[in-house]
Image (cartoon, rainbow over the protein chains, first blue to last red):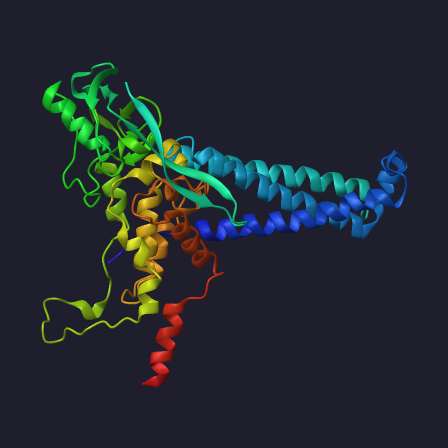
Length: 123
Length: 279
C-alpha cells in the first residue's frame, strides 16, 4: 500500500491558489489602471487625488486585494523558482518559511499603509 | 567526398503550396566524431574522429559499429535490438537526443556527425550513461495495475478485466514508451531539478491513471502531487519532440494536471457509479 503524506496543503492546492490569484490580480489591476483614466493621467497621480483614493473605502479594498493577491502569487512564484535551484530538505523548508514570512510581512506593511492613509477609525 | 542531395518528397502546407522539400543526403563516406571519456578512471573528455563508408540505409549505429570493428574496438556503446524496440542506443546525435539505430546518416546534414552521451544522465564511459536514477523515477510511479480483484494467488477468484476500444484509446499511446530516456535527456527541468520525475515517469503515471482496470486513482495522484512533482514541468515540449515512438509525454503531463486541478472529469468514477446503478 502507498504511504499518505501529512501535508497542510498539497502542491495541487497551492497551484490552484497560484492560478486563481493570477487571474483575480489581472482583473483588479485592470480596474486600478482604468481608474487612472477618469481624469487626466498626471492629475490622477497628484498627492491629493491619491489620498482621496485611499480614503474611498471601495478603492481601499481594491488596493488591499491587489496587495494580497500579488503578494501570494509573487511569493509562491519565487518559492517555485528557488525550489528548483537545490534539492534538499533544509533548503526546501528554508525557502518555504522565508517566502511565507516575507509574504506576511509585505501584506502587513501594505495593509498598515492603507489603513493609516484611509484613517479608518482614526479621525 | 562525394555528396549530392536527392529530393524524396514534397511536403505541402495547408494552402496546398510546396512548403518544404524532404531530402536525403547521399554520400560515400562521413566522419563520425565520438565523445570519449572514462569517468570511472577520472578521464577528461575528448572527441575521436573516424572515417566511415556509408550507404543510403546506413544508420548512425551501423557507422559506430563499423568504427568499433575497424578503427577502435574500445568505443563504449550500449545497443541491443537495432530496430528501435529496446531503447538502448539513445545518444545525442548532432546535439539532439535520438536513437542511433533509428537515425539514418542520410537524414543528417553536414559531413561530420557528432555522437555524445545523453544529457541529464550520469556519465559512465564514452556513449554509455547510468540509467539508475531514471528507472528509480519510473518505479516510483508504480507502473503496474492496482486492482484488488487481480490477486494472482487466488486463481479461482481471478476475473477478466474488459475494456472498450475507447477505454484503451485513453492510454494506448503512452504504453508505446520504450524507456529509452530521450525525453528525460531533452527535459530542461530535469537538467536543474534531479528530484523531478521527468516526462517518461509522469507520462507513465498518466498511463496507469487513465487505465480503467486500475482503481488506485487517488494514491496515483498523490505520488506526483508533491514539491518536485508534476507541477515543476515548464511545458517546454522538448520531450514530445524527441520521442522516437510518437508518444506525447507533454500531453500526458497536461492531462494529469487537469485531473489534479479538477478540470477534467473523473471518467473512472463515472463508470464506477454507472456500474453500481446497473447492478
